[in-house]
Length: 259
Image 1: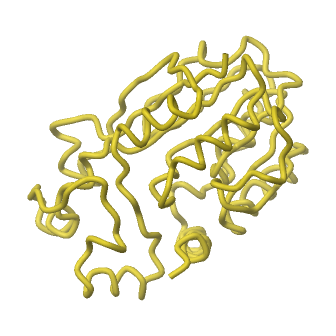
Image 2: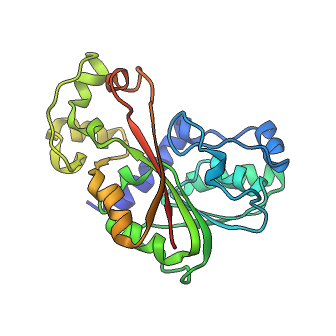
């Protein structure tokens, strides 16, 4: 199957279902961002440190890489940046458009695969904003390479991603029985590793299919593409989302620099 096309439609369906990652940011948050006072997340809970951003975002060219949904990209635009929202899902981009029209913001919308940024010239952006989304991408190497290519020297890429250990446990037992049972190895893929009946259920429900990339693929891949890691933090999710949350951070964020 064409996983890029499938996940595009599955995220359209997530918007229809009212996913928490598709709910438009409030007018109050936009108003605060316009005054330069904003908080924004790469991972479920922890606010990204303010010093990961330049003191003033005015005039910066920022690429929101797989970050549609009407949440983070409008905040960056309200803070003064020239923002391009690039996402695989038409409906996620539509959420950004709705907020932009509601708040009088300018946001360029582009639909496509994060592994192919060929429509953008070399060194087009000062910053890349890439919240948790590459778990829906089968191969990270071209994503990091393309991100490095379109970023200007002296720029940064802020990324969020799963702690890969999240993917070694039986998801059905975690969600429905409240217990952790190691079942899978890394790297992980819903397509390759799930039992047929479980995979068929996910596909019948039009749920996005995921990949559990290793830390070597996530952080090592950024370094191999040419980035220097200049910051890192971990974050938790919720006990309702996974029982692993009781024992370990479940997400990681990195600040990568193009020197």
